[in-house]
Length: 216
Image (cartoon, rainbow, N blue to C red; front, side):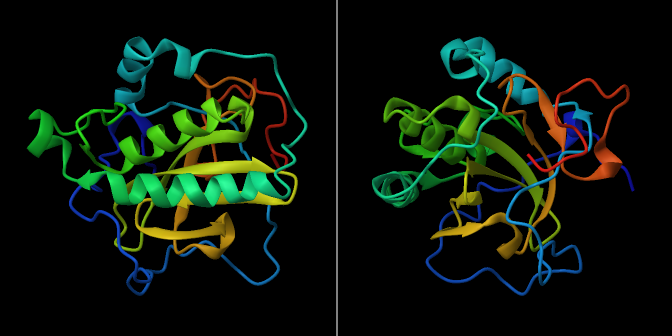
């Protein structure tokens, strides 16, 4: 069944952070033996509707920078930064739903109130890592279906050694194919406002983004 990006509901606020492993994954589990550490894009995709409002409120977080096609070298202290920021944000933000906090079903923002849901965690991690010197091309908001087959947002770090997941459900940073998720779409590394499909059923013709159909 085709999932339209603009109407995916991210049912993530009530789940929050847990130091425990996720529940037994459903049949949508993506990781397989021998899977590539690098994600593959299948074409352009429509981003979640609430993303556009976020870009209007925080234009600097969505600004297009000089295109950097090469993957980011995250050796040494850079991986430590990923771990530190992932853990600190997970423990600093209280998980609540958008409906509880804002009275709407989906609202993307930087969680200044100390409360937020999954995409707010991901947006804050991206913001802090960019302040620490990471390029926007290496920090991509990503939409998945989780172990309950519900919409969920994470941050993926696009590095030379693979695509790593920063998730508010766990402090453990893992390669994307070692998570219990089905990957739907994410920001393009060439333009933060453009999104690409990670599931071929999500691709929107015509194909017009460099690298589509190849490992990103």
